[in-house]
Image 1 (cartoon, one colour):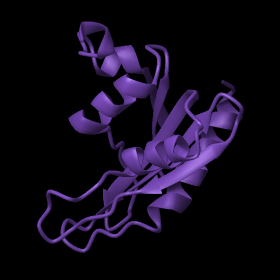
Image 2 (tube, one colour):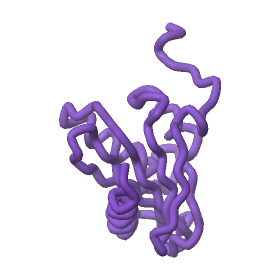
Image 3 (cartoon, helix red, strand yellow):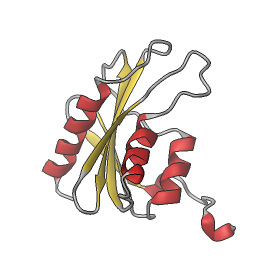
Image 4 (cartoon, one colour):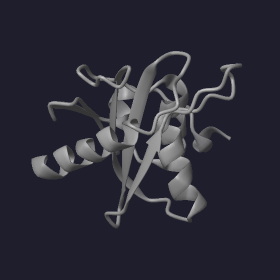
Amino acid sequence: MQEFEKKDLIQQALLACKNSYSPYSHFAVGAALLTSDDKVYLGCNIENATFTPTICAERVAIFKALSLKDAEFKAIAIVGGKDGDCTGFCPPCGVCRQVMREFCSDDFLVILGNKNLEYKEYKLSEILPLSFDKQFL
């Protein structure tokens, strides 16, 4: 994946972040999921007053794609920050990593970006080592 493609994906995640519904934590997150045929699905975090039904941006994007029968993924860009100020890097939570494990390959690219279009990138196997998946069932 070229640098300009990664930065474009980060820009799309930043746009998705603006749709965050985070009145409790005030921590907005946006994600842009890239499929193997170069479609992009956006997601933002959506909170709930009881917290348990809250869903992360990454899972929103992945579940959108899956609901439309798009199930082959290359990369995801994730941005996030207090009140939508995405200056740092926002890694995915454990639940999102496990969902990625279910639907993505070991070399699936996870791009952590910020508003300056700086980024760090990791393979899924790096951020979820010794993972549990369907092969164990």
